[in-house]
Length: 270
Length: 257
Ligand SMILES: Nc1ncnc2c1ncn2[C@@H]1O[C@H](COP(=O)(O)OP(=O)(O)OP(=O)(O)O)[C@@H](O)[C@H]1O
Ligand SMILES: [Mg+2]
Image (cartoon, rainbow over all chains, first blue to last red; front, side, top):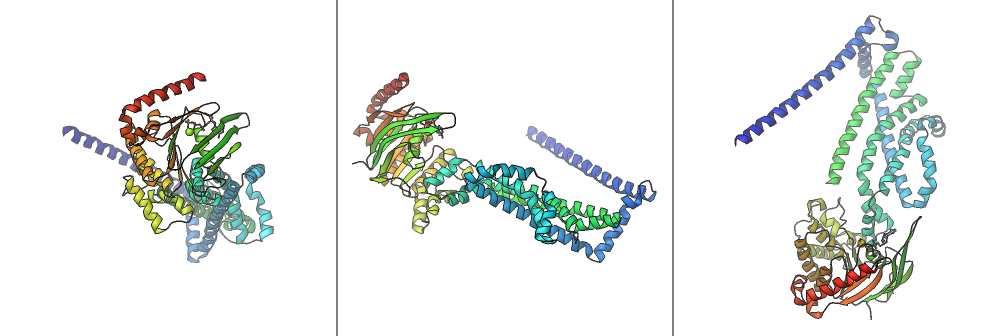
């Protein structure tokens, strides 16, 4: 009895100490945030840094309000976000389909192996100009950039996990006379579902890179375009605003995908 | 006339660096309704032979026939339960046991209720919606057996189904399996390391010798033991006599190496 209440007391103590620690962590995170932006503002106002290049939080804020008011920010943001989402879904889907084709034909996978290695090591953004010429300076080529950047690495990762599925599961299916397609559907794909989901998380980051570079090149609209336009007219407030918006939305998207991953993997491993 | 005929099977595994002859000159026949055991030390090719009979592996030489038909393609005539249960962890027990039916488009209400009945016979009613990870090893083994029986195969092959279980569970499952198979009149091949299990469960025992795998001896289990369920057979006076005989044979297999 006495033992129990003592344990409870210690446990409470422990929980309290955890809570205290996490409060301090939050506190310092906030301090860094405030110090960074306040410092930036003060340095810029006093001309300790060049306000033309580094702008100031207050200027960025005012621009943000303006751009929200005239609705142009949401337009650009909408384009970029939808291109990114399309890009990473396409990249993951295509990569998985390619992996399935390689699994289907071991001979083909042996033949293609060196090409995959070359394609994987090549910086995909270098393909940008070719894509734009081939697909036209449109949303299509930007989405293609967002997809192409993740498709090869997805193929390699997913194909590797396909091959690592315990062959005895396939044996079980074969004893029931399963076709190769049935084996894929019943064993390979569900066994690799967690891997596929976790490539989503990697791909969302990659797709942002592809889409921003694509918008640099196409130069029509979107957050990437805002950066390149601001750069050309020497409006660095605009550049910095786009950067901050990208930072916020890339984080949100990453968190959403992570949430989705946790949900799906929990369901599938249940 | 044999129900299952295995004719002059040789099998060699080839890898880049080696050629391992796993089976050499295996010929045997199994009658309909008979229960036979393959007994032999590890690595003597028992699993290889089952894979060949099941059509999963093409032998380097020889042929297998079931009811005088070549087993080029299996259409659920043979049920093969692997050395481990290999239940699919992402499928429920229900989905696992109906897998064979689903793959062959036979998911009729009648066949489905048959699988539930089997599950009940194995003492596993009420686990249909659970996942394999929620069951114990012995329960999983029984589910795997239900999965194998669900397609109503003519020949059943069990690869060391009880080796990973504790002794009591093993004895209980031996009785259950033997009883279930008898009631269906199934022909069965059991692979085991356990001399006692082979005697208690089977009508005939094929003793294998290793490197390369060959049939060393065929032992007929006397009718008195065959009539009894495995647990009672283990207590019969003839049991220890045969145990001694086989024990000596097994030792001579080993000293010969
Ligand atoms: N895929 C393979 N490639 C090469 N050699 C193999 C392969 N599978 C089995 N062998 C070899 O064939 C021989 C027989 O193996 P098998 O698995 O049939 O033995 P087993 O009698 O079932 O043994 P255990 O009782 O341990 O299960 C062994 O020497 C093994 O090394
Ligand atoms: Mg084996």
